[in-house]
Amino acid sequence: MKRFLILAISGFLGSSSVLAQKMSVMSYNIHIGQNSANHDQLMEIARYIKNSKVDIIGLQEVDSVCNRSGKVDQMKFLAEQTGMYYAYARHFEFDGGSYGLGVLSRYPLMNIKDLRISLSSTGKPETRSFLTVDFIKGRTKFTFATVHMDYRDSRSRQVQSEEIVKIFSERKNPIILTGDFNAKPGTKELETLESIFTDVTQLSGPTYPAIKPKNKIDFIMVKKGLIAMIKKQDTGDVVYSDHLPVLAVFKVIKSYRN
Image (tube, rainbow, N blue to C red):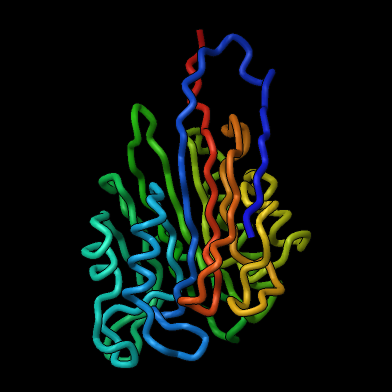
């Protein structure tokens, strides 16, 4: 299920000197640590993440001390098992705990924020988490975000996409966006995101369902104008969740004007 692409981008930096920073990223909807048969796979997910050796991961469908998943603080557990730093933001309280998004990182996390985005498909005003963090690798400061967009309605996803673009459109530092977008390539909501982001997983395979996957709805994107090279795209062939993980390795340009 591996896909590879070498993509060089040149000519847009003028007289800048360039420092290219290699980055490996994963996005994984972990389905509260359960596979499609609702059997616990949290330890297997932790081992897979650890063995992947990626720099940073966006996680969706994460439980925090919910009864249904054994009262486990799943982000704390994954961080302990992988030796990574973590952040968590809840969508809402649920079943004795909460349900939300997570980030695992090999680098210390800063400026952890839960920027709420609109959910308009329920008939009443609601929001869901949009988790953003900053981290430094080498001499470059990155912003990393993860999102789980509305599964019910494309109009709601379109509003969410517009809000994400508004949040990030004026920022100049490298931005990585990950998540379960619940939308297929070519849809209006993805085209809105691609007005400022480049999909670095465009050649990876479908991600849902995990068994006999048919739909590509999980993505990794990077702010436009910052990619020097996409080195690898890979849909992980593991069935520890009802989604497959998606991975990308790429180089991000940090430029300094002369």
